[in-house]
Amino acid sequence: MKVINLLIGSQIRSLRKQKGITQEQLGASLGISTQAVSKWENNIALPDITMVPPLANFFNVSIDELFGHHLNEKTQKIKEICDQAYVFRESNPSQARTLIENGLMSYPDDDLLLNHLLYVCSTSEEPDYVISVASKLISLTNDIAVKYDALRFSHMLIRLKGRRSML
Image (cartoon, rainbow, N blue to C red; front, side, top):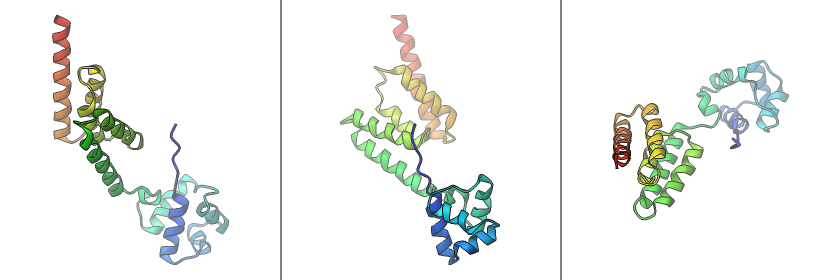
């Protein structure tokens, strides 16, 4: 099981300082104690789930931003993983696959990573696995080009398996 390091305490501290207010002022605005704010900022305790929307609203940020999750950074990191894997796609498919699978540990079910995985798996050695990845991708993605690619892989391998069973 992967442990997720929540950065909400650091985010609260950073946002509070950007706003130029004290822990006391933040606590008073939210109707909580200064000690609670201090515990959050020092990662001793996490805010109650019911406090997350008011915190995000107070700082005028999304809940994702409050938790330190930035979509642009995620997109950039996924692009970097795919670019690195592409370099090895022909020369060292197992290295490319390792990069993509490690990326999928951080970004599970990301359709771009799954699509790249189709290209580095051995269709002759593990057709059932490739079909399962393609099927998963077909059900997950909203990108028509990616869905088409996955359908193409799936169709090709199902036909190939059918021919083998006829021999």
